[in-house]
Image (cartoon, rainbow, N blue to C red):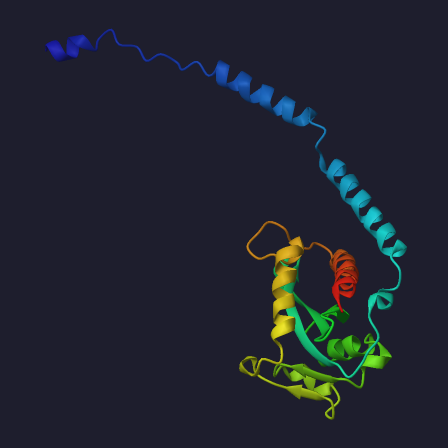
Length: 209
C-alpha cells in the first residue's frame, strides 16, 4: 500500500527544550537577584509611618484652628470607609459648624453609641450648647434632646456636611471610591484626616468674614 510505504521511514524527533529551559532558569536567577524583596518594602513602609508620626506630633492642637462659637447651628454625620479589607467597615464621625464651615470635631470608630459619645466629648465646650442636626441613625439618640434634632435629607438641614463628605472623597485619597488607594492602618487614617481637617479649618478661617 503506497500510503503505508510513505510512513515507513518516519521517526518522531525529540523536541529541543533546552532553549526554553535556559531562558526560564535565567529569568529565575534575575528575579532572585532583584533587591525588591519583602524587607525592602517593609523598610519603606516603616519610614513612611515614622515620618507621619513626626508630622502629627509637630502639628499644634486641633482646637486652635476653630473659631469662637456664637449662636451657631451644627451638622453631624458619618462617613463610611474600610481598613485593609472591605469587610472591615469603619466610620468617620464629623461635626461641622454651618456658619464657618469648619470641622469642629471628628472621631474614627464604629457605628455604635459609644463612638457617638466619643465624638461629642471631643467637641469644644463653647459649642456644646449649640443646636445640632443629623439623620435618623439610632446612635444619635445619645445627643442632648433639647438642642439636637434628627431630620431627613429633604429638610436641607444637613446639606453642608453632605457637601463636606463629597469634598473629603475628592481630596483624601484614602476615601476615594473605586481606586487602588485604601487605608491599611487605622492610625494612619487618623493622622491623614487630622492633616486635612487642620489645614481645611485654617483655610476656611482665612476666608470667613
